[in-house]
Length: 74
Image (cartoon, rainbow, N blue to C red; front, side):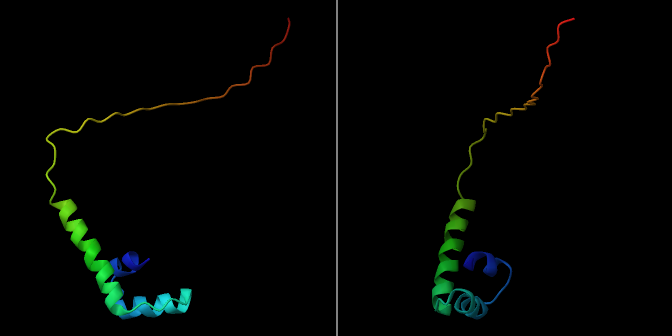
């Protein structure tokens, strides 16, 4: 929740107030800043990771049709 609100541009003070109002949880603005900073740090590392030149991909397409057949004797 903290990350999604922060990504939407909600201030840390507003996030803290929201958590207190909705969940009754007292979370300081500093705690929210710590959470978002850690996630941004991890995201920056992930974005900077080396990529393989080729990635194998498997594509499977399936159509499943259940048919009920009535047998009759002619």
